[in-house]
Image (tube, rainbow, N blue to C red):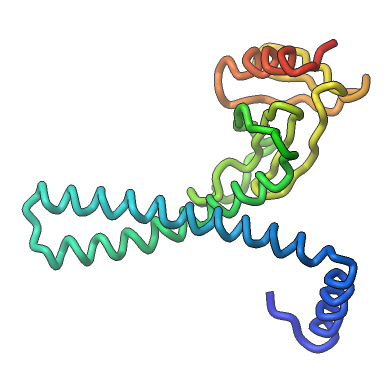
Length: 195
């Protein structure tokens, strides 16, 4: 996003105030961790793609220049996709508390079908992420809600999972994976929910 005119001045003033308050360093650390996750995602997927192309090219007996051209093209596309996936993981991991670990991530069926299907690098639209301390609902890189286990009660309703937060129904979700509802209920019981 490019800032012009008054918006640029406003961003500069806000950044100065945050730096004076000591908050700017926190934002820089967060940005650094997200960039690191993005770089790792890009490098890992590009490397795997190049290995696959070179292996296929060598096995098929293709000339070296064709293998190199295919590897470069594939590395660029795979690296870009990996960077997007890594960025999403980096953003999601920022909400974890010290010592908290991710136990599982489950795809949630959206309440309606999108007009255009998402690109492969975007991943599922909604995901339920289970950690050792909480349950989180994500819409790609946006955290919709996060509740600690002690405030939750989960009820299995066939393939649906009914979620109650502090006695009120917070939502009902339909999970893609078969058996996920009972798996999540078991994790919830193990980590302090449903009491």
